[in-house]
Every structure is written in C-alpha cells, then in structure tokens.
Amino acid sequence: MIANIVKPGNKTYGVLAYLFDKGRANEHTDQHIVASWEDFVLDPGPWDSPGHKQRLSQLTQALDLRVKQAGDKAPEGHVWHCSVRAAPEDRILTDAEWATIARRVLHATGIAPDGDPDGCRWVAVRHAEDHVHIVATKVRGDLRPPRNWNDYRRAMNELRAVEEDFGLTRVARGPEAAGTSAVKRSTRAEEEKAKRRGHDKTARERLRHIVRTALSNAKDLEEFFNLLADAGLQVETRTLPSGDLGGYKVALSDDGTPIWFSGSSLATDLSLPQIRQRLAATEAQPTATPSARQHRPSPWHVATAAAERIPHHLARADDGAVQAHLTVLGEVLYAMPAHAPVRLQAELHRAAAAFEHAAHTRARADHQHARALRGALKAMRYQPADHTGLAMLLDAAILVVLAVQRHSALHHHDRQVAAARQTLTHLQAAYDQIAPISLAELARHHPFDNTAQRYARTLQEVLPRHAEQILTEDAWPALTATLAAAEAAGHNPATVLQQAAQHRPLDDAKSASEVLVWRIQRLGDRHVPGPGARTAQARRLRTQTDPGLPGAYTPPTSRPGQSR
Image (cartoon, rainbow, N blue to C red; front, side, top):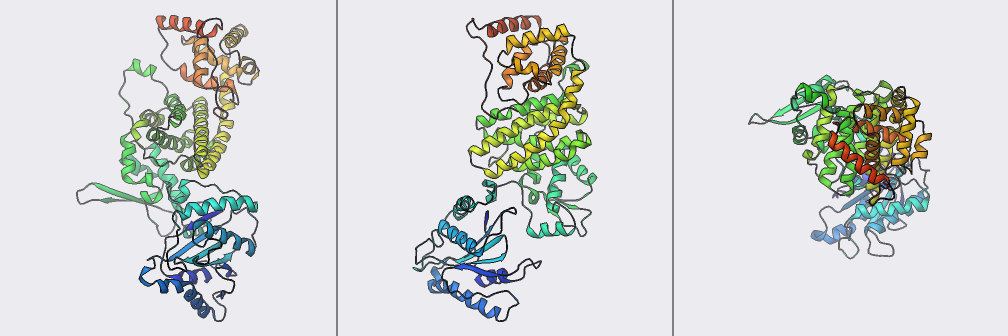
C-alpha cells in the first residue's frame, strides 16, 4: 500500500466536493464514507443524489467546527488530506477493512490517536475499489494543532505493518517515494492520456528515455540537441539576455498539440546545468601515434574494468564517486541498445529504464570521478562491439546492480531494491542470449589437447579450490582458447589466471570459467610485461602457489551474492 499526503490546504468544502464528485473521467463510483471521528456523520452520497450539496455543506461545517472555534490560532493550512492505495494485484478490501486501515494511519500520524477524545475530526471516503481518502481538519478538541510531524514516514511504516496483517502485497518503498528521486513522476492526467492514445508509456516517460539515449551518445551540447531532433522530437531552447543558453524544452511530434517539457521536468539530472556538467566531464581522447593506437585497449574493456570498480566505491561509502559512476553506467546502459543485436535491444532498453530508479542516491554527482568510464562510453561510438565486448560489459553491469541491490537493502530503500531486481532480470536475459554465442566463438579456437591439459594442470596449481568445477563447465573450452590467446601475446597463463581470480571472487559465481574468460580477455588486452617483470611475476607466483612457503596464495572468497 502507498500513502500520498498532499500539501495542506484551507478549503475543506473543495476537497470533499472533489471526493464526492464523478471525477475527471467518471472514475469515481459509489462514493461513500467508510469511517469518521464519530459514528453518526451525515454521508453526502454521490454527486447526483438528491440533497447532495446540502449534506456536503453540513459535513464541511462539522469538520470545520474546531477550526472556527480556534480562530486566529488555527493553522493556515488546516486541511490534512491523505490517500491510501492498495497494489493492483491485491484483493478488493471491504469497507470495514478500509475503515480499520484509515484509523491505523490516523493513529500512527498523530492526527487522531486511538483513545484520544480530543483527536482531530476526520472522515474516510471511498470512491473506488482500490483506495480510500482520509480528510481531517488539523485542530484538536483542546484547540491545539496535532503533533503530526514526519507524518508521511509514520504512515508508510504503519502501512508496512498493515500489509503483513492483512496479507497484502508488500509494496516497494524508499527515499524516492517521498519525492527525492531524480525522476519526475507522470501525473494521473498524463497516464490517462497515454492510455487513450494506446501508448504503454506517458509522454514524459517517452521523452525522458529519448533524452537519456541522446545524452549517452552526445560528445557536446550541439550534438545533444541534434540527436534529439534526429530522434523526431521538437526542441526549443531559451536564450538569456547575455546571449548564453538558459534552458531547453522538448515535445513529441506525434502527440497532436505539443505538450512541452523542460529537461528538469523530466528528471532533475536532465536540467541544462546538469547536462553541461556531464558533457564537460567527458574524458578527452588524446591523439595517438600509430604505434600507440595498436596498444590502446578496447573502450568496451575499459568500460568493463571501470564498472567492476563501482562495488569497491559502494563498500567505501564514497557517495560522490558512487553517484558519478552510477550516473555514467546508466548512460552506458542507454547507449548499449544501439550497439547490440536487434533481439537484445528490448531487454536492454528495459534494463536502462529500470536502473535509473535503482541507482538514485541523495548525493550530488561529481562527474569528474567517472572520467574513465565516461571516456570509454564516448569512444564506443568509434569501435563497434563484438559479442565478447557486449557479454563482458553485461557481466560487469550485473555485478554492479547486485552490489547496488545489497547496498539499498542495507539502508532499507525498498523501492530501489525492487528496481535493481527488475534491472537484473533484464540484464540477465540479455546476457543469457549473447554470452553463449561469444563463448562458442571463442571455443572454436581452443588449443590442442596437450596444451589444454597443460592449462588444466596450471589451473589446479593456481586455483585448486575451483579447478574441479571449472574443468567440467561448458565454458572450459572457451577459457583454454582465451588462455592460449593471452599466452601467444606474451602473458604467463598462471599469472593471468591468478590475477583474474584475485580481481573477481569465484565462490558464488554462476560459472567460474565465464568469469575468468571475461577477466583474462581484458588482462590480455594490456601491454605484455617485459622480461624482468615476467621473471618477478614467476617468482611471486611460485611463492603464492606453494602451500609450504610463507605467504602462500589463498583463493579469494566473497560474500553471498557478490558475483554472478
């Protein structure tokens, strides 16, 4: 259940008239009072019933009695209005059940505590099957205002208990439920308009998706506006008297009369100043010599490596760095559909839309923290991804979302937990489609049996705890091919295996061999160590893999749920 407490008003009659009216789209049916501060309150009945307005005036006078008695001491906004809505999948509650819920909310918020004869006067009105409205006047019988500070949080906490007691759906909640999310929610009128026009998303939601996608691909402000126009949006900019750009707004071209939305009305992080800050933080791609270009790592590898470091920032509670990285990772997810096969695009679009709700925190993003990830994002435009690049980035993104989900759960941000879970569903579905293709392509280049057997012995020496499992997994041929490619490039197979295992815990991995494949792919993309470095690595490896020597290597462990 979700409570919505509106800004206090001072027109009791106007609120009641709305509740007992037919509604903007005739959605109010069988309007009636289910509970009140006393048992014999006159019910005005439906708007078209005889004597309705007279009864409505009488109810208003009864609710406002103490307000008039308090005179100048009455609060300026004396009307307290709260709606409580059940989840769509819940059963239809009876009037008696809604009456009980209303009384529990009023008690929890301090508006009308149980057993307090001086509690505020109130009524609970039901005009639909799935929700009830509670209206109270904020003057007690002793003519003092109620102690209803922090009423929203109190109401939501009580509704959590109501869900358990009544066997109802536990609705996700979090700080963004109280209006702190960067995403601006669509209004009921926007939702009804979208439904009439046959759209599953409102205009605000569709515009936000297009704007985020354009931002993820733009290298500067001019290109950002061009991409919006290329996507079919109407775009207008506002120029200040100084000649500087002061803002922008967008509208859909296929929606009849244009309804304009400023960037900040789509999401707070899509305002012009925020977009400028994010674009300015893009890491410049330096001009490189031909020899340097040969060694420049793939931007897909760089993005994956940068994404894998985000859980580390989460663990350190470095809010500025975390929010910067999560913001850019969200842009990466919005950019990925353009690089992915058609069959993956729908899942990736859904993952990107869900992640913007999962990733929100209260911290203001310092986008300079994520320069490497942002630079890789922009460089992806010039280097199309193969199946391996997509698979490894999806694998890293899944790790990040798992970490975000755990972090949100620790802070009881239920709505972000639910959004992270939804993001994971779509990312995993995309990964499950692309990873087998990439692994099969790699496996076609697996080495001869004697080389594979040598890698198996190396695996048993370096990772004895995981070797038996890895040797039986479907991705073992792909891992041998990856080790062969790394060795051909001059890397030591034992060293890269050890480095890969140290970087990514394997204990709870769905497939340890897949984790190693993606990590070794990126390690092999680095410069090959020189002769002196290789000698030092070999000496260190002998020390770490010999259990009889001091400082022997112990495979890393992880907390449950840390790896895929």
